Length: 352
Image (cartoon, rainbow, N blue to C red):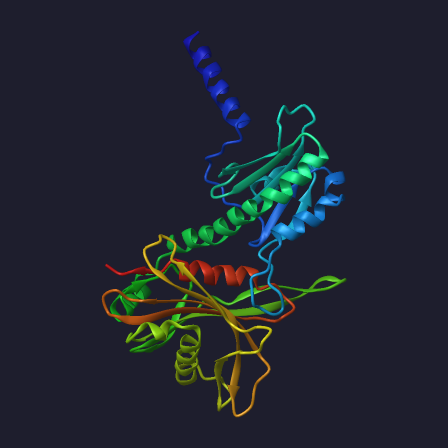
């Protein structure tokens, strides 16, 4: 009898946990970086609400060209939301409940529901008008939450693959530490400049109208450089760009003699800068996003994107720049690689 009571109690607790949609089984998330799985009825997906979803959830990371969307929306109906798809990294439920006794729609978020570090956001409304109103006013919040966890998830994964060989060199030379993906290697070292290459990634090249046809190599890495801090004017955009081009000219030559990595200053992709901080809010600095191309005797056509973080080291009194770059075909998505770069510069900490 005691055994039967124990089994009954265990089953009750298990079913209660399932009903609360909580999960702690240590499973990894599925789906691609830069995707949000929208779970709703087909009628909702085909309605005018789709425009509201696109407007609020597929914002662009500026000022890159071609455009880099923060997220791509994919759809499943509730009946098809089963199996491994439940572990998708980013899930948005849109639910119409005519019996709901609510004066206005609600938006709720939950983490690690069917997999670790999964984010699930649910929008609930009692009718279509209420649903549209809720989405128009609340999806910016949802985008902010998905945007935050996308790089935070990568940062956590990189920290689990810590390479003490690289970390010891960063601490000694720059007085910092970074979270880097497994397989990252230092390929260039000078007293004030390091270049770290990421493992080469191969992702599908997507041709519009014909689906996935080929595989394109994506080259990415991180450059860390430093120079003496003299006054605050050095932290203005034009001066940071000038210092960047100087450092890259002498430290990142192209395989073709006379060419070097330089900043694109075209009006359509002119670098943008904002005040920000690292992941744990211990370092305040300046985030900069822009495009690069190879310059020299003549302008070379290839180039890519960069995403940097500048700050003044509190002990060494040097301007430190952690600048990630992505060199990839324009026919494949840069979202995953740029999110990795974002996670790396967000991870920077002052070495103890």
